Amino acid sequence: MKKSVDILGLPVISITEGRELGMSKTLLIDAPNRVVAAITIEDEDWYRGVKLIPYDNVIAVGEDAVTINNSENILTLDAAGDFETLLDDNIRVIGTKAITRTGVIQGNITEIFIGEDGSIEKCEITTPEGSTSEVTADQVSIFGKEVTVISPEGDAGKKFDAAAAPAAPAVTAPAAQEAAVEPVAEAAPAVEEPVTPVVEASTPVVEEAPAVEPPAEEPAPAEKTAPEPEKPAAETPAPVEEAAAAEPAEDKSADRVNEDRHRRFLLGKKATRTIKMDNGVVIVEAGADITEEVLQKAKLGNKFIELSMSAQ
Image 1 (cartoon, rainbow, N blue to C red):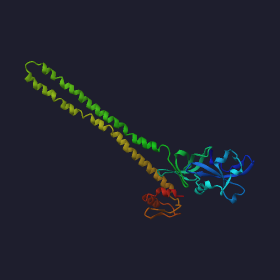
Image 2: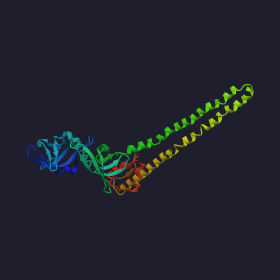
Image 3: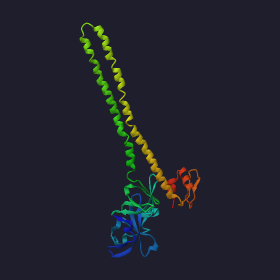
Image 4: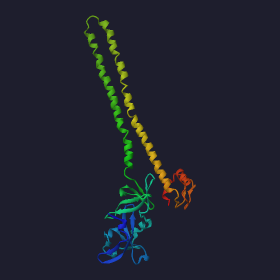
């Protein structure tokens, strides 16, 4: 894996002709396929137009040179029809703003790492404070001309965990209800036991009949006691619900911190183009300073991300 800085500025050598054909100048990026499509070179005839080497024709990128088979691998602009769209798009990746899908600017892309087949493996992000971090290619949603949209690992995981957390106590509630019903079912045979002695009594059957009625009324308190265990079962998830309710509050707090950092980042910068609301009201003119008033208008008009992408 090579950094772009390890490729650019190297001499291009034809191994069959033994000639130095020029110097590697820029990388031509195929953004949809996330690969380096070609290397542009600069030679003694640079003033006649762009020349490039398809990356498939590169034999190796060494420490001291880029090697190709022969000079016929170099294409002029007239012969580079397959690369014309990429030349027009002119997506460099390096120098673009790295922004998350939620609209938080992470910094600028300052380097890309390229595999042997030309694929972009990962990107280096540098924050305004100077710290650096890396994101892999599968964490990048879009390589754009001015903005690289990233989706760091962990965002989806946090949403999943928050949704799954309340699910655990939901299983315990029916279990507690079943436990409350079981004692009632077991209490029923206990009522039948006093009835047996009544059958065994010989003469005073009529007098013993009232004695059967009090045990028959015993299920009434049993029915009252059955709902009592349901109270703790209903109350058990309460702390979990409170904890779940607390999580959005923490998320909102984190969003406010990100928004404040984003606002401080934009204040004092200039807009590279005119931003308007959907109804045509101008939020900021091209070249004007981004002030607190501009930020408020952009937020009200749902143009905050568009303003971020146009700040310089």
